[in-house]
Image (cartoon, rainbow, N blue to C red; front, side, top):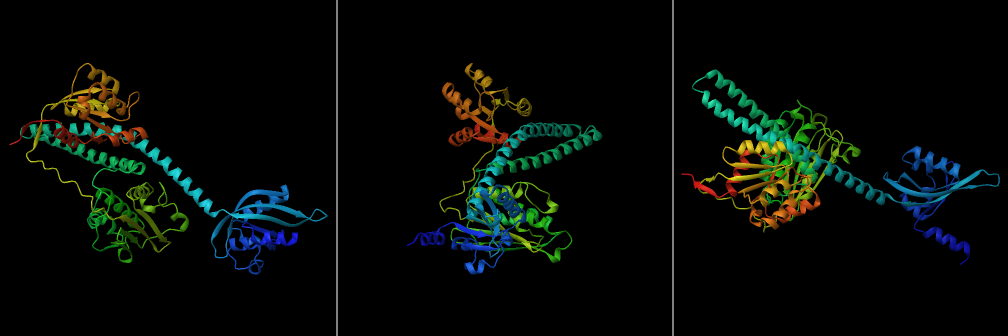
Length: 510
């Protein structure tokens, strides 16, 4: 084989696209690899195409040519091209200028590699990193908001309870005062509702950062759909006809609260994609079926505005595109996080002016997974007057808990874990220790480890309270110990129930 034949063989079979093209965009030659990359069936077909028409963005070709004319060559130049079938691909190119004896450009020649797949992977990694960063930020914000929410909740519940007592006192003596006290109590109850709404937003932030793993892990999907529909029905009925197509299905491996949360978000998204006042022209349909023996599919479809492909790619991003009337937020990002954490998938299909369909796939619950049996309470438990130690670096939380519990219990507040440890090393003992997890100096984790060494009989009495932000070490530790955990803000009813469960009862109510 002659040298020319060897070069021709190399040209024909090299797994890199090779070309020669004139400044006017006319292909002089191209190897089969480049023909294949660009989606053409033969060189004869591709040579009829002007190279300039393959560029997605004319500015990229202008930059490519200006660089070649100025430098005489270019390396690692990445550009988007349009295949014959219309698909967009990314090419990485090395090229040089070939000139005649008079210094005039005869043609450009170069080699290209298809890096579309690599570009997709890089984009996925960037997106994953971005979501992780937002997740860390969300966890930190949630933690900071939960501290004031905690003492706000406790103080408002305390004030509401005192006003209830005052209202009873004034009822027979001063009707006008009783009415004023009743109004004040009603205002505090409304404040508690507002706090609960803020707490739900914070809960969504925490869910996005780290989906909650607590609670039952198996749910009847039909029941979850019915609950979600009941919650949003009033929102939908002014915009569309709502219908359900629910086939009998096995339970799914996700907690009911989380599944309802996902479905409510999807239904609200569907509702807000449809303008008010056109009920007879629009539909929202919820479907439930077995996608396979191991997967349950729930879909939510609407006939609303729909989305263009570019917007669709960002729908599950935090503060991504959303129906105009719903604003922007974390709703769909939270849904995606919850579903993927449960081992499922959430996808979307949409067409502009035709509507959107969200498709939720969830694994069938393992037959071996059983819901925990309900606690058999029997006679109501009445907790004895107990000694409670509260450890929190937020002074207002400690004061609020002490104010709320001091009528029934003896409460000591420590401003940090070191102060609490000093009290315990002096021989003081407590029936219950409420300990914050994330504290400067000595964390709740370090306090627990020290307690295990110096006062091991008190370790099981520790209940961790947290605003939701964990270091990897703290998260791993909390998963490894049996101690109970309370999430801020702590409702008075929840706290008193826990005290009743953990502290030995003094008597049984008759």
